[in-house]
Length: 177
Length: 312
Image 1 (cartoon, rainbow over the protein chains, first blue to last red):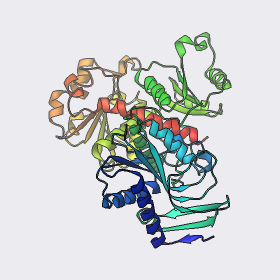
Image 2 (tube, rainbow over the protein chains, first blue to last red; image 1 turned 120 degrees about the horizontal axis):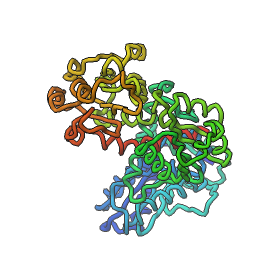
Image 3 (tube, helix red, strand yellow; image 1 turned 180 degrees about the horizontal axis):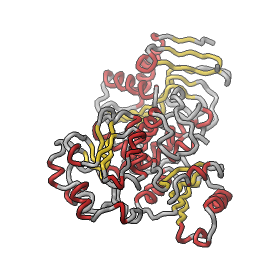
Image 4 (cartoon, rainbow over the protein chains, first blue to last red; image 1 turned 180 degrees about the vertical axis):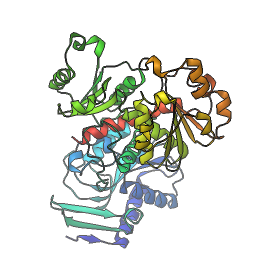
């Protein structure tokens, strides 16, 4: 298994996600793209840029902080900072694309779905992730995947680093320190 | 995932602002920012404290603070119990510690306590295992009021550092003044305490405040005037002249208001004695942040309840 992907790889994965999404949604109709903090927010921005180039005209953007909805707070490290959720768009009746960096147990997505239901009722919610590393603990799957990693040991971390957050684009698979 | 956020909060109790660092104060304010957004949603509730129990134990009258804590706990999905001295066994002579131990034995996670004795919250924090949040202990501290004032000032000016804040009136009996003083000076504001010599002793200088008995001498230089309530129930008659004399020397009258800086920000922790410490139309005017303080109090208390329960 490869355990290192560089900037060019990340770009290709994002482009691949965008082309999968184009095939699924009508570019002339509204679509909301909501990223899960922190890197899902960055990816949502990049995807939105790609989709606009591909002809999407009515994209609403938002950011979701799921800290208050998590059921695994003790496992994600000591007391993560709660940051604001920014959804200043109408989400009722409009398809919504949820974006995150890594899909693992599915618990973040479960929390995100709970949070979204407090904001309204999209006509459908679909999930785009840069990396699907397997290891689900809930019946949740992504609709659009940039990179699928198989057989990643549970004691390994999949790190997505993005320029806007970390200074460089890369994906690494490393043993948890 | 926000796994790399620094763990700046490790306290299980909030007893006062005196012991908090500037970083801890900022951390609470930043957390409160996130909670403020919750109150703008169509569903104004998050599941963060689902299954937890918050008890409001008030040994003193309160409207604002008690309702605010209750609503804060409910917006976090906690179950709440309201306990007040008058309708409880306290009136049968049960001690503070016994009452608290019994409340705790029912399996509660947080006790929010208001008590007329300074140090009551501290005492409980050493006695019980659950989190204690001080909602006012005698003339000692009222940390969530200090925090919401700090939050409101930061929201108005975009910063705290370098501001001059006058806290005016009955300083001696005011836990609000103490909590404000500690918080504001830690974040770099200058605090000027203003009041009659009987209600403001020189000893406050040791806590880092500038003090004056002449309101008019500082009125033109301050960015914020925080007018305290004259606490008639606590003041001994020898400390206080007459209401009219107090108003003429220390009230925020129209005449004084016009000598303030143009963009002066007027605050009051409530409940107001309209016409005594503050003129009614100034309290209701465009430069008043009084209702903003109440709104922000909710976000600040949500942040505090959330943080103390995560640090258990």
